Each structure stands twice: as structure tokens, then as C-alpha cells.
Image (cartoon, rainbow, N blue to C red; front, side):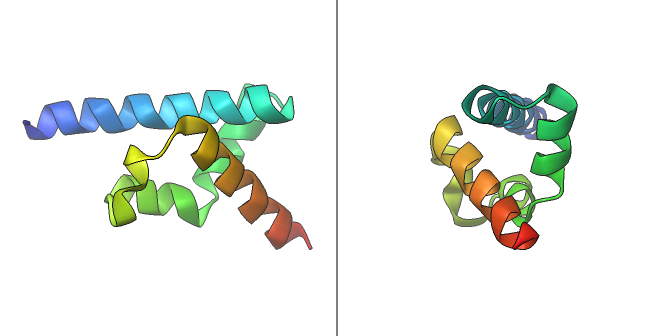
Amino acid sequence: MTEESKLVTRAAKIANVILSICELYHISLPEATDMFYSSSTATMIEDGIADLQCRSNKYLATLIWEEQNEKAN
């Protein structure tokens, strides 16, 4: 897999996770995008840590949602 194809695959995964956040929690795309990029889970996905990119979009969306709720409390 080339570096370019890895970037394309990662970008598609990120987009799908953000859409899953929107669908699961009925929030807007900008809100979901902000939530995604402010999470430590997003950093781990982008860095390829713990093979999180192999997890389902809904699973990752749930992790990010829970992470944000913990920050709020």
C-alpha cells in the first residue's frame, strides 16, 4: 500500500466515523467534526495506534462520544 493510499483510506475512515457520530447522536456535521478532532481517540486513529482504524465506525463514534461526556463531567 502506498503512502498516498494510506492517507486516502484514513481520510475515508475519519469521514465515516464523523458521519456515524451525527447519525447515532443526532448532532450536526460541524458539531460532530469538532467533537472528533478534539478527542484523543482521533489522535490515536490518525497516528495508527492500537489498530483503531480497524474498528467499526459506530464503535469509534461511541468511544469519542463517551470521551467527550467524560470531559464534560
